[in-house]
Amino acid sequence: MRVRIEPRLLREAVRLHYGTRLSTREIAHSTGLSRNSLKRLQRHLERIDLDLGQLAGWSDEQLYDHLGIKPFSGFRLKACPDWNWVHAEMRNPSVTLELLWREWRATEPGGIAYSQFTSSYRRFLQQQPLAMRQLHQPGDKLFLDFSGKTMPVYLDGQSEPRMAQIFVGVLGYSSYTFACAVWSQRIEDWMHCHVQAFNFFEGVPRLLVPDNLKAAVIKHGKNEVQLNLIYQQLAQHYQAIILPARPRKPKDKGKVEAGVKLIQRWLLAALRHRRFFSLAELNQAILELLPAFNQRPFKRQPGCSRHSLFVEVEQPALQPLPIHAYEHADWRFKVRVRSDYLVEYDNHHYSVPSRLVQQQVDVRATGEVVEVFHNHLRVSSHPRQYVSGISMQPEHRPPNHQYYAESEPAALLAWGERVGPALLRHLQYHLTERTDVANGYKAASALRKEARLHGDARLEEACAYALTINTFALKSLQSILREQPDKRPGLKALPSSTPAHENLRGAHYFADEKDRSTC
Image 1 (cartoon, one colour):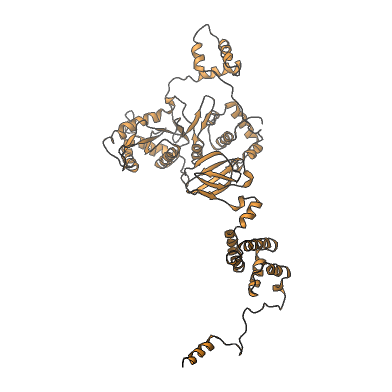
Image 2 (cartoon, one colour):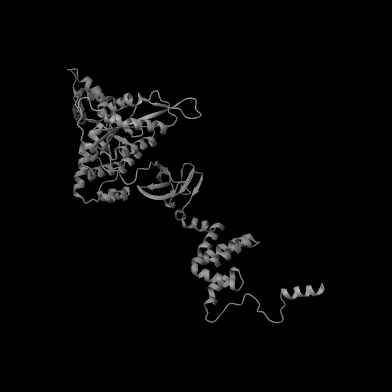
């Protein structure tokens, strides 16, 4: 199959095709792919046997290989004219599309051809809809936005209040509303608001419809929608789909626009005379007012409220919450691995396999762990450190580096503790008790070589035998390993002390002699 699709968009298109009931148009809008390319991909997927559960474990090359698709090498979209300008010029009865195309191509020689010019203009005309009321299905959409109005919070030690942002989420069918306060519209606060909203609703809608703030949408052009990848991680965790509203199209998110106004009038206005001294205090006040707001009856539907519609119809239609709540992760993309096979995150360096030197990797960090991904596969995982330093995993070193790292005194002593007490005693003698430090270090390093030749267990036996004959000499130990005297039947080690007999006088004899001299 010959279709050029970026790996990230290809994975998302396959996931939405198999895991949802979205139409081709909705998938195309979510991924930014053209419908023609998407249709070719869907027809191709119907002809192959694909297990969606294996998708996450495939690298980009494996994904292209299993799907039989030529790898994406990047391409440049041809320039398109401003269709509003074309539409305005076409009001002149003497102007034709061909004339406008020729005038425009004179300024954009690399632009689209005439056939695409006419078809694109027809699509533009079809996108000029009449105003209509949107009909929403239960559990289908959650509209999300920040209020333009903020709330002051008076923190200790600050002369001026800090302004808190107000997040608002409105369910499409019931208009059931959630609101909370955060310090900013940055991605970490945006993620936190989503988690709190899902917990408030006790379920997850099928579609998330955010505004085009940078925490949600990186780029929303005419031909492409580029979502924030961290936001996509949250959507995948909760099995939701992101369909951002079109730029400068407030009717696409009319629910949340109305919800924001009502929150400003009924909640923020009610709190305008109160002073809050922490963000938690402000959120508690908002949470206390939300039930009364959601239980207010609709003016045009007497006896019906947001709460009643939510409880009776919409909440049962929501997807269940996952077992574990989403944990926000900070991503660093296209980080180049240094020549010492380390990547840096937050002033700390973490190791990756040495084969990835000078390659680009993605770094994912949570409060507990730092993970490194290459080609969509995790290649390294470390406990997160909050001080400068290096976290090195021995298996990431190449063999020659690993050999020298294992020859460090601390590493040798740690190795001796793992093998046995006899080897540890020999290492302690060579590394800490000898006056000729350089030769002691060489002898201790030589024991590591003997372990590679004979094995740790055999080296421990030889060291134990050497201790019974009171020797630490490296040559003696090598002779024991070579000749194996401790393995000969009937041969015992020499006694470590002189046997007692009548010609030996101990300490008690001299004590008695001293007593006699004082008499």
